[in-house]
Image (cartoon, rainbow, N blue to C red; front, side, top):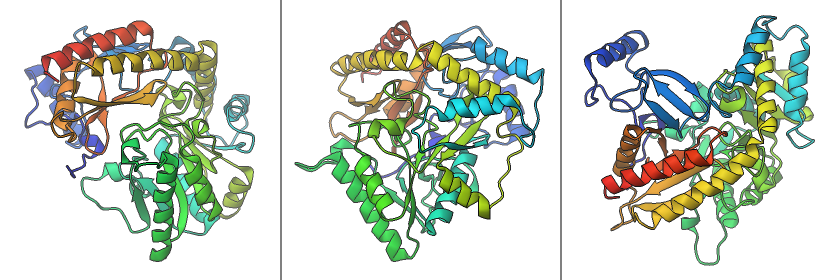
Length: 445
C-alpha cells in the first residue's frame, strides 16, 4: 500500500455519506453556510458537544465520552484552577505586550525553568503554527541556508511556510524542492545488526547531501519528538541524538516541535526531546500550553534570538498577553501540584500493558507503541501485514458508540492515536480497555 492519507481526512465527516437526523443536518448546514464545507467535523454523525470536565466530555443529549483524542486540554477539560486564573486576570487587565506586567515575567521564568540552561529566551505567540513559522525563519537566517528535513507524514502547522514542511497536510505530493522528507523512525525497517540511531542518522545524512546537491543546503532538521503524525514512534530513548549531532556538525539547526509531546505527556520527562538526551537549537510549543486557551511559544538560545532580532522585527499583538500568561502559569502549577507527569508515566505503563494483553487475542493489532500518555495501536491485515485503515476507521466509529473519542494517525491512517488528558486515571484506562475489547470482538479484529 502506497497511498497516504492526509491528516484532516482521517475520521472526517462526509456530507455525502454521513448519517444525520433532521436537527443535526440543520446544524451542519449552518456550519457549512458560514464556514464553508472545508470546515472539518468528525464522525459520520458529528457530535454536538455541551460540556466537559477532566477526561470526560458530554454532548447535548447527555451522552458521556471518555476523551482519548484531544491533547489541547492537556491537564483536563475545564480545570477549575485554570479557569479561575483566566477569569481573574481578564477582570484585571488584558492588553498587548508593549507594557510591563509582572504576570508575564513570572510565567516566562517558570516556563524557562523547565528547559536546559542554554535555552533561556522565549518568544510568545498564539499558535504552534506561528511558532514553527518563526522557527523556520530563525533557522534559515542563522544557517544561511534554505533546506528543511522533515519526516514523511509530519504535520507542523497551517501557515504558508509551515504547510510546506507538513507532508500530511497535503492531498497530493506538493512539497517544494527545499524540503526533503525521510521515513519515520520505525524499528521494523532495521536490517540485521542495525540500530535505529544508525538508520535514522543515515536517513538524515542522505537528506542533507541531497539538499546540498540541489543548492539549498540544510537549515534545519524539524521533528515532532514523538513523531505523532507518523504514527507515534517513541523508542528507544536516545535514538535521535546521532542524527541531531550530524545536523549540528554540518551547520544546521535542530528544531524540536514539542506541540504534541511537551508538558509532561511522555511521563519520564517534561519535554519529548529530553528522552533523547539532545539539546535543540529551537523548541516550539503550542496546544496544551494553555489547556485550551490559544497560546504558544518559541524557545531558543539568547545568541540566536539576539542575532535574529537585530535583522528582523517581530511583534505579536496577542502573544504573551496577561490572560495568556496567567493561564500558562496555572497550567504549570497544576502539572506540578497534581503530579501529572507521574500519573502519565504510571497510567501510561498500565494502559500499554493492557493493550499488549489485548493484542494477544486480536491478530489485527500489529503493534503497540508510545511513552507516557501518548500511544498508538497499529492495525494491519493478519494475512498480509498490509496497513488496514478501513479497520481503523471502523474501530474509531464503534468506539464512539461505546462512549470513547479517539483519532487516527500514520502514513496510511491505520493507527489509533491515544492521547488523553494527563489526569487520565486507572479507572479510565480500564473503561477504555473494556470498550476496545468489546469493539474488536464485534468487528472480529
